[in-house]
Image (tube, rainbow, N blue to C red; front, side, top):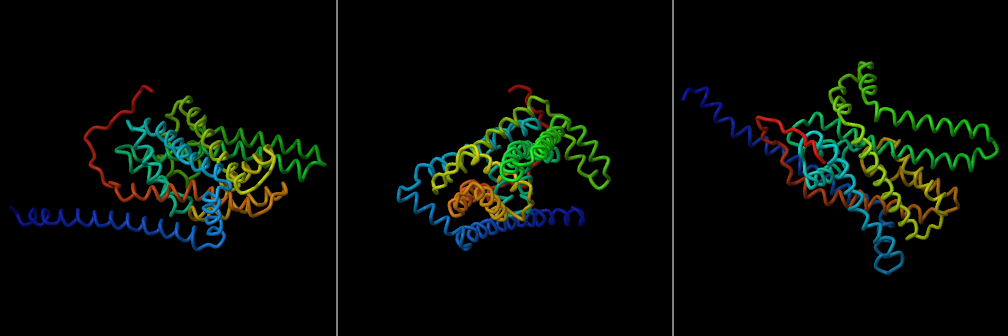
Length: 348
């Protein structure tokens, strides 16, 4: 064997070993960061630790047990709907099972826990795919955008309720103008969903954004029915999330009327979604400030609202992130690529 070929042959195992070492190190880093943030957010922060102890105490003592158990029971439904949404989007790219979709959602949740604005959610989902991973970035964005559309639609109505009731009740003309502005805003938010070619064209018109075109190019390939289905699933998930929030408020002793309380929950979720965050831990503070302010306008005390909001974060983010760690450690980041690409199924 020639010396150069022998040298290349000898280097291949070393290269593979280094690559496996980087993968293992990355998994351990994600694990340690996730566990560290979970520990800090639940046990080191005084407010969160108090809410956590209150949650356990109320559950064991029987006070508020049923609403808390119902909120916990809705956690699989929450992320199951998200997995269903991702399954409908991912199967447009390649055949994928619901089980793989659910695993991808949990992996993305865990990776997103330790990354700014939860960008790790993109990586967690595309890693589970075998092909067309660049297109998968556009699919993840499309799913998140559908969820944002629902949040904006409900949240703007919720905030509109508070503005009209507490700030503009003596200014009907201004209130009417605000209603028109909310309707136009919601239409503008809906437009890129069903006219995604306009979005791609707008991206191409701005030079710094042109590099994102190849990721968004997959969006126009989704038929309107699929987009409507994903939007409806997003609405169901939003309803589950609001129901969990309402149950936890009841468990901790909040007694806001149904319509104002629903408006406060919708406004809280919108304000949280509009504020960029460093990681999932930062979402806690944004949601608490929004919730305590809006429910404070309704005369609700701070402690029940604060406890419910933090418990909602523990149930829907902290606990599923801990579960997702098991899948992160078993990830196969580097897959062998086949010679032929799989076509998406054409049937339901």
